[in-house]
Amino acid sequence: MSKKYHFWITGCQMNYADARRVATQLESMGYQETLTPEEADVIVLETCTVRQQSEDKAYNKLHSLRPLKERNPELTVAVMGCVVGVRGNEALEKQFPFVDVFMEPATDGLPLISQLSQEADKNLDDQETAARHALLDGEVILPDSQRGELVTAPVSIVYGCSHACSFCIIPQKRGIERSRPVGAIAAEVRSLVAQGVKEVMLLGQIVDRYGYDVPDGPDLADLLTVLNGIEGLLRIRFLTSHPSYMTDKILQAVADLPKVMPHIEVPIQSGDDEVLVHMKRGYDQQTYRSLIERIRRIIPDVGINTDIIVGFPGETEAQFQNTYDLLADLRLDKIHLARYSPRPGTVSARRMADDISDEEKRRRFQLIDDLNRDVSEVKMQRWLDQVVEVLVEETQKERWRGRTPQGKLVFFDDPRELKGALVKVRITHAGPWSMSGEAVDRPGARSNGVSAPDSIPLALVS
Figure (cartoon, rainbow, N blue to C red):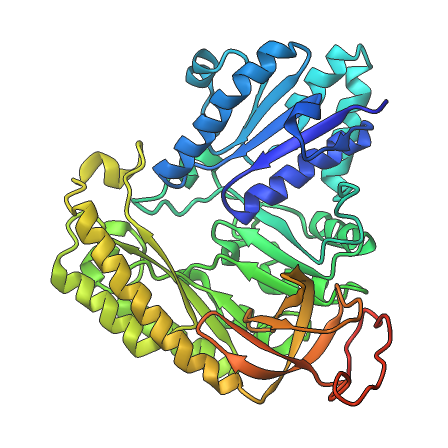
């Protein structure tokens, strides 16, 4: 009977990409995935510390595994991700002595491979060589449950971060910026496509800084050009960008390359210049306004999302109003909202008092959330009776679910097997967060008795 592994993953999409790389190593050793931790021979926790709530969630999960380990001493428990970080794990080893392996973020899985190889009395050098080879050439082995089923997949292209915002713990947890070679990324994408993936999401803490650590090396626009030529890949997205590094060359690549979606994630975090200085963001609100204007000029059909932190230390009511007014003026497509929480070791936690009450943070959060809903509801109405191209990802409550090039969520009914297909859908209803419609290649199919085919090619329905 083959051995089994189980992953518990929380946090950003980069965590899912990191976990998949470790799963590739386990699959290459003959392990099979199980969704039941009690059945597993290896349990791996992929953790997040971007907020205290995320860190507490990881610790609670770890504590819950202690009884399982006590009942089954042969079980291997591994922890990876930002809870571990890049600066050692002595404190974690003392707090959780039952954990067998701690692995840094963006790991290639070698610490775990080494542990399992020693336990199995295998040749460690051979295992390490195989693991490093898979890491270098980008080969990906998806779990059985995902092969032919996973439509969109995250792909890390730059690890770490060398632009330390005062509120962010990521540089301490993931280390300095390191860009992956274009060839390794392209090989990973080709491998994913060969296993059924149709869309990739390129990831970096600051994704538009890809290549900055390589003198005279390729930049994000160059990488997008290479990936655009991969046969079988339908769509490419990337996140998260930083306003200071979003060049016209990148924007022009988005506009010119057919597989790169007109969908930009570019956080501002605050609309007040003084708060932005305290955040160490490196730009002011007028620079951001100019960037949004430039994005919309170069990519006219673009969807633009942003991030906002409310309740940053010292944020006055007037400074919050500046943020609110900027968002009301720019009318962006989606706002990812967070209430400030101090992370130990960051500049803001060391030097600034967390002086905004939780009640006030929640009030400010709700005001922007309401604005987000109102703006989105109006903007989504433009799609009514329009035909949009939807990449079908999965079914949800017996309806097909997918996204437009701009990242808008669309639901529609259709009896055919459409997972992974690009389908043209006429929008008949638009709410603030999603739309619904009908496939235009079969109008009236249900009402006039015409039978629809059982399946559809994984290509554009014209």
